[in-house]
Length: 407
Image (cartoon, rainbow, N blue to C red; front, side, top):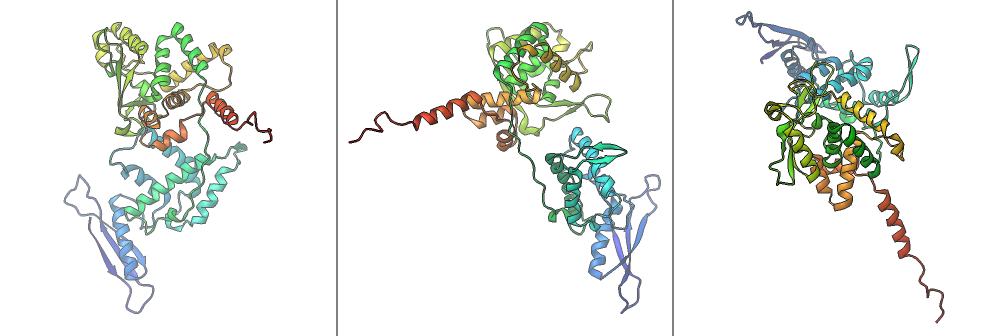
């Protein structure tokens, strides 16, 4: 896209006044009609040339601005144009970014030019949103430390993109100190609690048994469970004891869409994996497959109730079924720890690590792109092993029977 710079003020007159002109995208109905946008700028020639670059880019993006782009304009452009991984961002990520921006960032900065906001203002803003506030007569609870980190990440992504697109002369977030996150130790349910839940579901709801079994022994995410189709299971013939499961997609519910949305796995190709299944799980999958007709086997979702199994359960459906099952066997639980599909993934990862002491195995089963994610969020300590470790360490330091003997 082309543009031009024209000096309007006379020589020896400061500040110099310039006219910036940029060619706008043409109207599809009038392709031969040239469209130009103009604006006025005051400053040196070098400053005017920088302003022209930003003005041309803003016209290309169809922004109604003179080059001083606001946070609202930057956010909308970033949502439409940015793709750090050269592919569209996940629908759930787009939705969460929109909620975060509308609730916290837009009321404070939306109408302000990005370059006018100082780093100290943004740092103070982080402190404000952490505190409880009264809104419309009601107390609005402040954000937790980790949520503030996500707000910072959103602002940083926007301004970094704006700077790379030459919509901003500098990236103001480079001078803002990143807020600290709170590191919370991962917690996993006890093996006895998971076994009690599985035994109850085996008798009452085989498909929920399957969902919990997949999460607790293969560490599938909730979205990956909902996306499973019968063709993802390779169970072979009756004489083959171990089957295989292919995981390469997820299903999520986004408020902007009526139906469920198919997405890639959370870490993209790095989360695609093929996992071996034990004898019991393979046998149960084989029995379930044999009860379906051919069409269901080829194309139907495993967790669906419509006639042709083309509409998978909603995430809330899976959560409510799990909660109901927990309430039915609550008398068998000796802990207040809530069992969720997230905690079942933690349980699986911790169980694998406790038995193999290989974090690489846990990472591959979980489908993580980074080993640090596995270590930080999914490896819960084993209380029994921790108790034995401290006792054994104490036994090694105990006094020798002959320690008081004088020679």
